[in-house]
Length: 87
Image (cartoon, rainbow, N blue to C red):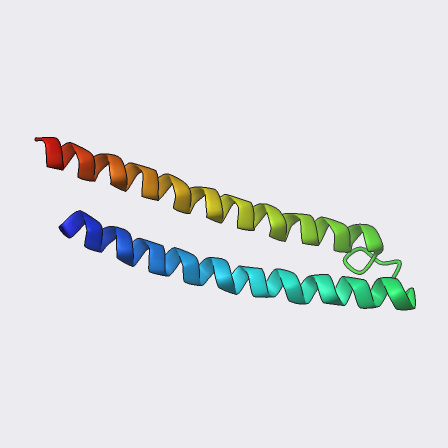
């Protein structure tokens, strides 16, 4: 039962972090769309269109990594629980 409690705690924390990052990504996507519609991209590093695309890609990659980490934790916890149940 302790393993299940640990998994619940891990999932709650992971899902909260994931949701927070998803909101950031959505906000940044909206900013990008506004800049694209108004041709408001700058020419300096950090505010150019290419920099924005890289920034969005990094946020997406971070979310993918977080999601995969949560999935892996679930799989490992399930395996541990099954081992304990058959022991």
